[in-house]
Length: 137
Image (cartoon, rainbow, N blue to C red; front, side, top):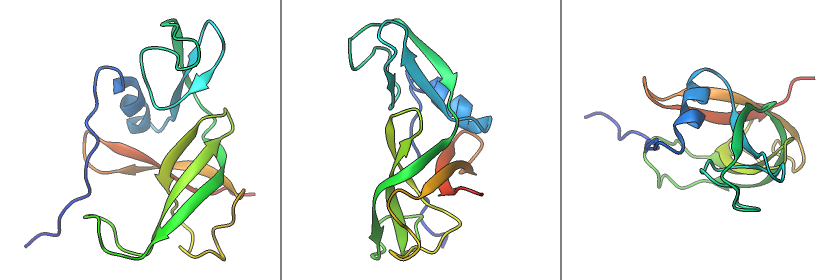
């Protein structure tokens, strides 16, 4: 019997640009045209001033490890413990939850404030997830 798969996000009209971006290897964020607030997750209005005048732009894909927890229990289908559930603060300001790859999943390797860069993990033809790895250089 096949192993259970990881849960898939369900794109909506409000988030479609984000998922199209990850599929193209881009991390896309939104910026309010009225107050310049950059935010995540995607939504059709600014969470800071409620303006509906927002723009989509390609983010740098760089950030740092803000917080994390290492899960050692096999609770979620599609994950092999141990794995880090991380909060990454992007250079543009927003924070997003993700996973850390290409690094041992230990407190010694995952240092707070370590520089990270986005990578993309294709789950299927429709969903590609942004994940993060230690920045090179």
